[in-house]
Structures are given as structure tokens and as C-alpha cells.
Amino acid sequence: SDVRKQTGDFGFAFNETCACKSEEERRRWSQALTVVGNIAGEHLLNWDNEAEMIEKIAKDVLGLLNATPSRDFDGTVGLEAHLNKMQSLLQLDNEDEAMIVGICGPA
Image (tube, rainbow, N blue to C red; front, side, top):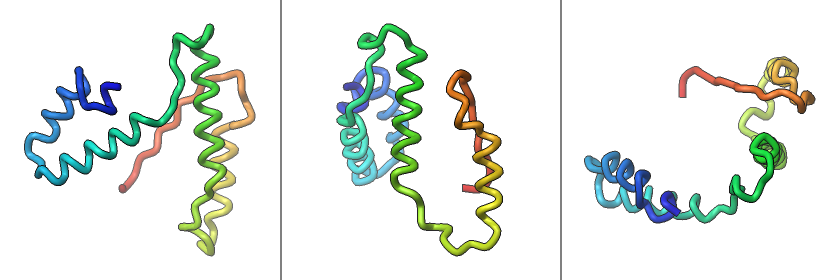
């Protein structure tokens, strides 16, 4: 709700961040945050186990990522081997452990 309406602590941080932005840019960010805030999510109070909730969210996100593969790299020579190496390093089959993945490099 705070993200959707830009209120509370989130609203305070939003106002500070947008202090030097144009009214048009602020409006666009506000609209985007309203859209994001309307996306249905999970609430911890609806779960008996926080780890299970996090696991479900991670699987949902992974499913969405796999459902819409990027076509940006089609035909790129040599990329497939690097992607396979990344997938093996991530050990996505291991459902019993938590993982943290950091990605760094140029934007």
C-alpha cells in the first residue's frame, strides 16, 4: 500500500529522491510504482513458514523468467557455453539450500 500510494516511510524516501526531478519524471515514477504496488504478492501472515513463502516466490519468479526467454542474444556466437556454465554454477536443482547471486559489471 505504501509503495502504491507513495506514503509512509516509502513515501518519505520517494519525496526525497524526487526532490530534484521534473514533475513529469516524478509523475511517471509514481504511475510505475502504482502499477507495481497493484501486483498481487504474498503476505507472511498467510504462511506458517517464512522459508516456504520465500521458496514459492523464488520459484514463481524463476518460472516467469523462463516463460519469456530473451531474444536479445539470438545468434550470438559462443554464448551458449557461458550460459550453460552459469546454470551449472547456480545449482538450480538443489531445493534444500538458500542461495545468493550477485551480478556485477557494466549496465
